[in-house]
Amino acid sequence: MPYNPDIANTFFRAGEIEAWGRGIERIITACKNDGFSTPEFRYDASGIWTTFKFEYPERATTQNGQNTTQKTIQKTIQKTIQKLTEQQQAILVYLNEHPNATRKELCAKIPDATMGGIIHNLSRLQELGLLKRIGGRKQGYWQIIE
Image (cartoon, rainbow, N blue to C red; front, side, top):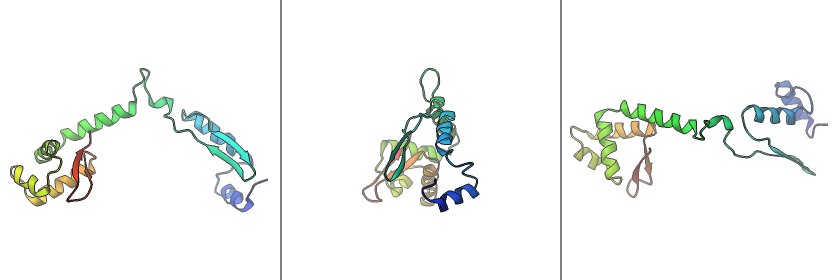
């Protein structure tokens, strides 16, 4: 018997419940199919508790144990870096050596740079996930994401 028949009926009409009592079976099957460990189920007076373990699926690692996701990220970053403009590359080089640099300082140190160009390129580098601002404008610094 469902604990809350109204909610159970809503899920049944939405197609999320095929038949009463099949939810645990579907959860276990989905976890196994995706390479995750089987969740733990605990029953008590307040109902049923499901505990999922946070583990990486086996299919995310190669046979020699290296994570394929990390390899993919590195390849994507390398391709992205190759597509950067000269000014964006110059910004990254300068910020690598001077993480506390301001926009005004970047504008002065990078050849042919305008304040608008610096602002645009800093935003673009952040969108690409290559650069991150840690802290505020006055006390913060730039972190290059590798």
